[in-house]
Each structure stands twice: as C-alpha cells, then as structure tokens.
Image (cartoon, rainbow, N blue to C red; front, top):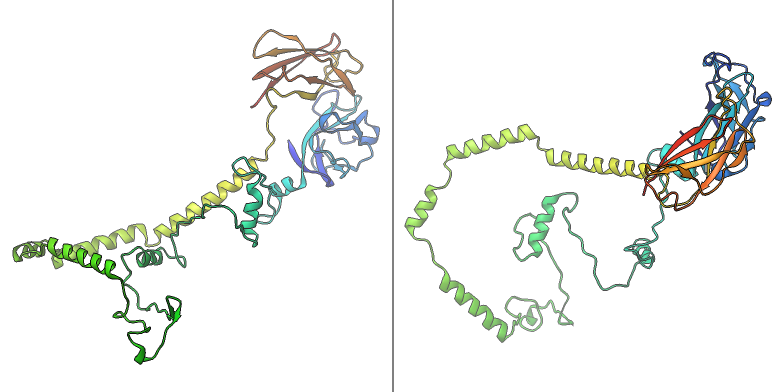
Length: 390
C-alpha cells in the first residue's frame, strides 16, 4: 500500500491491465473516458468520485501500466483510498489501494533529513495538564518560579572533560584539590556587612587576617578536643614496620614490566576507545529514536471491542468470476473466534459498481478473530478474515 500526501497533487502508477480473454496479454489502449468504471473511493464511505477526466498516460516500455494524476481535490480525505478501473469488454478489473496521510506525517517520513520533523504537542505530565505551562515557562526564557522541590543535576564533565569535573568535585567535597597551576583568587571587600580596610594600621581591626578571625570559644574548644583525640590515637610506625613496607614496593624491574603491560593494553584497545564507545552509543540512541518516531506513525490494526463502520467489499458474478455484481441482496454472516457462523446484526448496503458496505457493532467486534462470509445465489461467495488488535 502506497502512502500519499493529503491535499497534494501526485502521479501514481496503475496496472497491470491484461486482456479479458486470455488474462495475461498486456492492454496498451485503455482509456479512462471510455472505460466502464473509472472511480475513486475515499475513506469511510464517502461518495464515489469519477476520475474519467483525470490525466492518464500509458507508461512506455512497461506495457499494461499507466500513470494517473490524482489532483489535490482527489486527496482531500485522509485515510484509505481505493482506485477502480475496469472495462468489461477489454480488460480484467484493476484495483489500487493507497493511504492518504497528513502533510506533516508524510514529510516526517519522506522529507528532508534533519529538517522535516513530526510535530508533537505535549498535553500532560504525570496524567495532569497543569504541569505543561510550568514546563514551557521553565524553558522559554520566562522562568518558572513555583514548586518546592529544587531541580537536581549530576554533572559528569566540565568543558567536555571528565577529569576536570573530578578536580571540581575535590574542590567542594571537603577533600580539596591540590593540582593545577592557576591559583583561585577572591577579592574580599566586606566581612559581616562592614567594609574592609586595606591599611596596615587597621590589622586586628577589620583587615582579613588568619589571626583576627574569631571562631568563638565553643568552636575553639571543639577544635582543641578533636586535635587532642587525634594525637592520642595516633600510632606512628616503627622502623621495622617501615622497612617491611619499603620491601613491598615495586623494584625498578617490576616497574618496567608494568609500563610494558600498560603500553600493550593501550595498543590493543586504542587510547580513544572510551570516546569511540560513547560516540557509537549516542549514534545508536539517535537512530533508534528516529526509527521509533516513524514506526509509531504506521496505521494500527482493526480495534477490538470498537464498532467498525462502513466496511467495504467487492462481489463478482459467478457466471464469469470477474464482472461486478450489481443490484444484489447480499447475505452477511460471521464466525466469532472460531464459533459457528451466525447472521450479522446489520444488513449489507450497495455502494455501486460491485462494491457493498456493512457496519459491525461493538459487541460483534469484541473478538480476537472474526471470519466473514458474504453470499448471494448469483455471486461468488466472498470469505474474509479480520484479526483485531487491542
């Protein structure tokens, strides 16, 4: 089934047209204006559209096939689209089936890469619509001031490097960062809300100095207590313990072996292996998301436990097994999940040109598999199967 863009003129291929007598010889002289039927059937039982006046041209070097131009008006109804061309005295009937989709959906599937995206509008977060305007405010530059839970983020890199973040973490987690050659500086202008003097005569008054920072008696007592406890529990190593520890250190020869092994590992894996793996992971995530965005747009199956309106089918005369059966009273029966055939609730209505339609109730559609059988004494019986989806 070919997908077409709604409200957009397009040329489609129709065929093959073969001789009505032998059923295989290509017919190269088919004309829509003289055909018995040249019709377009739109989605959901919309009235039949005559296309005998549309642009129609045989395809050279591909006998029996023709180009048909569908106007934007022909494609004004989204959903299933069927094209019927038949000339009882010249060729066997030819049917073509299409799916007409919204322009945004079509462009997201077949448009310019990295330019045409499927438009999606978020309407709820956590089942509530109230969160959507707050989310928009948070990212459109106006800001969202509500809420009591602060946003948190785990930083893994600074300036694109993970090593810089480790140093940043040391600087603020209480361990301290001793590396680097650039000294952090801060110009202190106030302390306790009062301006600081730069005069040496004011030392001890309001100049920042390690000697004039008053921790308070309680804090000083706590520091002294912790220092005393640390010294009391400190057990310095003996000379024997230090000699034993030194003996365990790697010799120069052992260090050379370690260096060689490290060089071999770097040669086997490549020094850029982590970056390469990260690039591959990012590419896979992007491609999987792109594939999912397209597969989510594919038409779903017939829904279970949902009424199905205007189900269209075609009946042929039993006399020659190809001519459309018109003006017939069709009997419709169904088998539900393999049970015996019973009459359908609604009767069959004729559309025209051998096409008929019937609507099924919600109760009739509440089965996994539904076998349909359409019969009439002068027609070939038509068996069909519907597999529903939830």
